[in-house]
Amino acid sequence: MAQLDRAGQAMKLESFTLERMRHPKRILTVSVPVKMDDGSIKVFEGYRIQHNMDRGPAKGGIRYHPQVSLDEVKALAFWMTMKCAVVNLPYGGAKGGVICDPKKMSKGELERMTRRYTAEISIIIGPEKDIPAPDVNTNEQVMAWMMDTYSMTVGYACPGVVTGKPIEIGGSLGRREATGRGVFYVTRELAAREGFDLSKSSVAIQGFGNVGSNAASIFAEHGAKVVGIADVSGGLYDPKGLDLRDVMEYRKTRESVSGYPKAEHVPVDKFVEIPCDVLIPAAMENSITRANADKVKARYIVEGANGPTSNEADAILQKRGIQVVPDILANAGGVTVSYFEWVQDMQSYFWSEDEINARLRHIIVGAFTEVYDLAKKEKVDMRMAAFMVGLGRIGKAVSIRGMYP
Ligand code: NAD
Image (cartoon, rainbow, N blue to C red; front, side):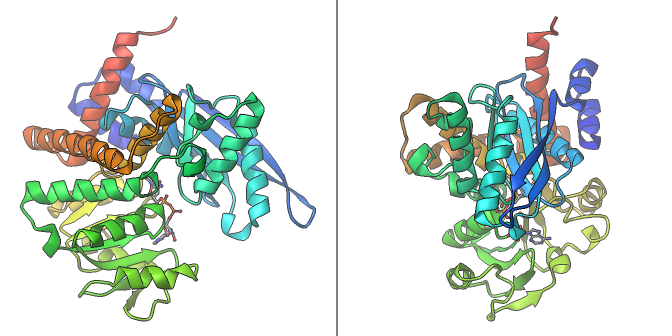
């Protein structure tokens, strides 16, 4: 809300639009009873929040995590509205989550929880209304269960109800890597505009899940030196550059990268302080805060995660001259290819991977250029500029549609 108010005031946004943006359109809280493997019944709490649908159907991921809360889902849904507007996709924003610890659940328990959660939220989701996707601790398999459950309730195969699905049931080529690829395109563009050589730069990536591991591979493929990676159990650092293929091989048979023997080990809470040119937080919210923003050594931060920089940290980084490419631009590659997946599903006509990556590059580079140029013109940071671009589009849609009734 602080980010919204700052941008709203700077661009003198109509108070009507600002007020609309402060309040999610629809909040659904559901109880999700699940028969556990030991025969007991456990009731989980789940949410689906549609923040805004003025520019099209709502879009946003589903998170499974013990720390999911209504407030967190609200913030994430708001960021989805902004993100879709910044890259100009014809979508509003939504987010969903279930309070659970998927690491402690069996595959059967996860499937039953996903199916019941989907049935409970099926009253508001649908390919023309609200299209979920993966987020933290949800993946292609979870999306397949959601697609199947929704299809069973409507009585026909409905691939367009979720994105991030397996290819075999209407998923898109390139979706798995899309967020990491978008992070790379944004960073390459930043390097070109700021005049630094990415192939001579060191990159550190916090989070080794969908976003972080794919980003790491794509940066390495393009010759950047990935000096640090981390997951929830610990971080690795090698100033000469990590051998990512070897790390991936090591990770194949393990839960975490943290025991990898051929690099220096870094505690999770110190990872953002390692020496590097570009830091990519790609784990959870608030990893850069008032407590460590002074210690960040990177010259640039490209936000792969949603909300990794707190408001106070943002101010400290700005004062220190560290440039931040904000989440709603930097990690928009995922929702962009999700949009392509949905378009392909609606047309039942599928594109090649080259075509998908070329269209992704076009959209992400276009959005980056618009935000970067506006930041320079208005002498504001890129987060403010991204908010101004997004809010401008949403404001126009809200005002053209007018107020019902
Ligand atoms: P994921 O569950 O696949 O991976 C999360 C990773 O973060 C895991 O490796 C986990 O071990 C690690 N992690 C968690 N806490 C950590 C900590 N304190 N320190 C270091 N590592 C930690 O999730 P994901 O899909 O990769 O999402 C990561 C972030 O990117 C989230 O903020 C998500 O909202 C955002 N995001 C994801 C997508 C997408 O397409 N998946 C798109 C846009 C934004």
